[in-house]
Length: 325
Image 1 (tube, rainbow, N blue to C red):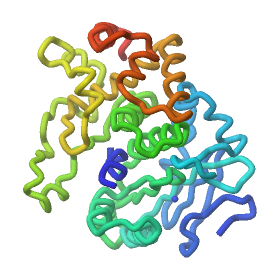
Image 2 (image 1 turned 90 degrees about the vertical axis):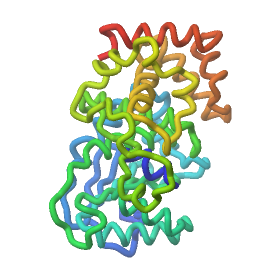
Image 3 (image 1 turned 180 degrees about the vertical axis):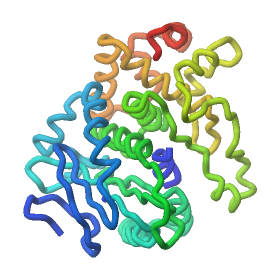
């Protein structure tokens, strides 16, 4: 559950057939081409402004995504249908107050049997992706305060989470490796905003309540949300500063450093950085959708590499080049 919530710090039926996941609450809705935005006490941005942009980014690299929506073949990670409408629309729920967010969390707590710890960290973070990858819920103010208050900028969280959701749905996999889900979320952020802002270890409140967790929320501190990650990562792609493929593929949310998160972004970017690589990456995604386990061996074999050394040679060379931008 922690990974589900973070990976995104880093949603009764209408006449259209759109599924409403919180039928006991009152919502206004706005339909876009591929999304339905539900709002309570707030406006439709940032979802109205950035959701379709995210879809366009993911459409270029996820084979068959268009058919998933237009033919209603969008599936949960377990393979079940995600909606009842003729053309599927992913649901985004935007709420203004901590009280409204709490109500959504409590509904999903009963629906998914979340623990008190799950509830605590979800409310601290203020956003979450449905475990079945059907909808996203975001509180636009301080989620731990009952009232509204000053609105927060949630656009990066929205784009990051949608990139992750579309990846999970396309592969029909709930437990994709962290490097795939988080890394593709970073990639979506970069392509929409030309920067990456979602950190997976900025959980100060969680760490204060768990002093024995052994994790420093300020660990690393090399990458900044307002800086260009490619430029900084080129500086980190030198000798002993490099993060290996093995380390990147085995990165864990609780021990993740900013440098590792940057390399996850760089890895996903590298794999779709040319037509040839993108085609091989799409074959990798198709294999996972058909039931293959996304192991390092499958990744190397599909992308045409015999071992880590050969892959890292091309990967690091690309990171140091002007093509990584």
